[in-house]
Image (tube, rainbow, N blue to C red; front, side, top):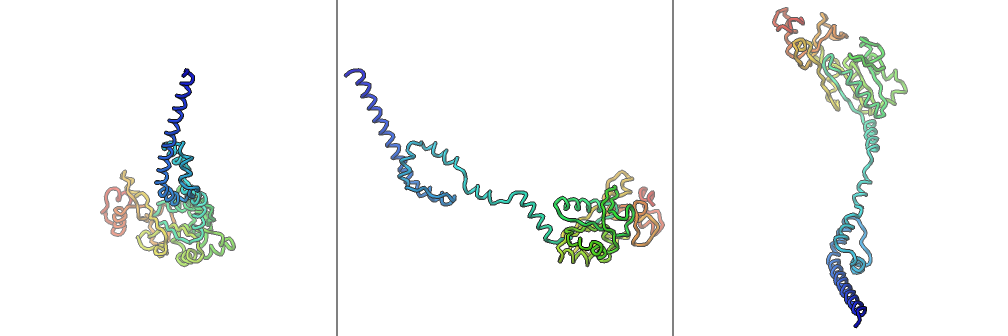
Length: 311
């Protein structure tokens, strides 16, 4: 036998061995597919994928050339159909924000902001007004015409921020002054709410039947810590109540930071309704309110150094 004939015979033998090994690998892989076919079908059914047609035996013949690690990697790289469908069903953020705006406009609500003088009630009122306007809602700002400290036609904070408004004696007068535009107001912000005699009736009807959102800012008590107006009557009807505090004027003179929750009248006037600023009222803590009120009532020198200087 020549050298070329020997090489040819060796090559044919190698080819037969390779075919035999390939056949055994395909048969083994096909048997595994036959064993795993029920499990694969169940998993595809749970994931929402259509089952393979043609039977596992047909798939075994075409998959015999792929080693198991390669087949597993290809299966892992397949796109998750069920996860994509779930993500597609979720509304985008813009749609969620639009839905929140519609819900806010469709249902009435009453928000109450109370606190003593200089607690930032008007500032908080205008902050909420700006927020609702940024959401695309139509807002009307109202205040009592009794409050003419800074400007008769604007809501003005102690820090100088101001906003045009309806200055009226009653909320019924505001509705009449707004005319046809009243129906378009989705939010009504009321400053100095304690001065309106028809506060409870108007707010209850506007929130319950006209589906408007009311933002009320005002005093919850007068300088004698007594009920002031109808603000407290709305607490059972309110969706939210925020109690703000200021900084005690006399504790500040003592280099201390103490929350002020009461309004002390420093002017010699006993009327309940007395519009004024820092020349008439001072925000005080409980300790200084009790001490200074006792000094005023009894004329004694019962207060400490800070309270005595204030008197």
